[in-house]
Amino acid sequence: MIAQMTCTLITQTINIAEYLSHIGLLILTGLGFIVYFLYRFRSDCEKMKKMMLDLFNGQPLND
Image (tube, rainbow, N blue to C red; front, top):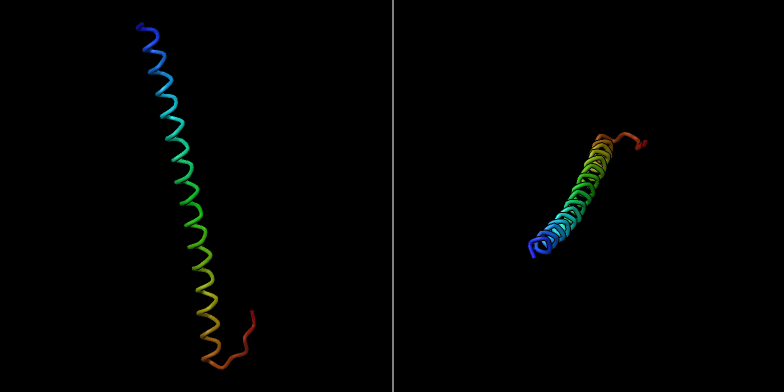
């Protein structure tokens, strides 16, 4: 009886740990994508700013 309860407890603990690790992976993946897109967006913003400055200054656009 006690052995069966211990076995059940261990199995449930393993299941919970597996579930939490999946959630952790999803969160990490999501954060990775967010950081990547923010970085891409920032570099695009810099390019756009430079392009606008070049336009307003009347200089030829060269990228």
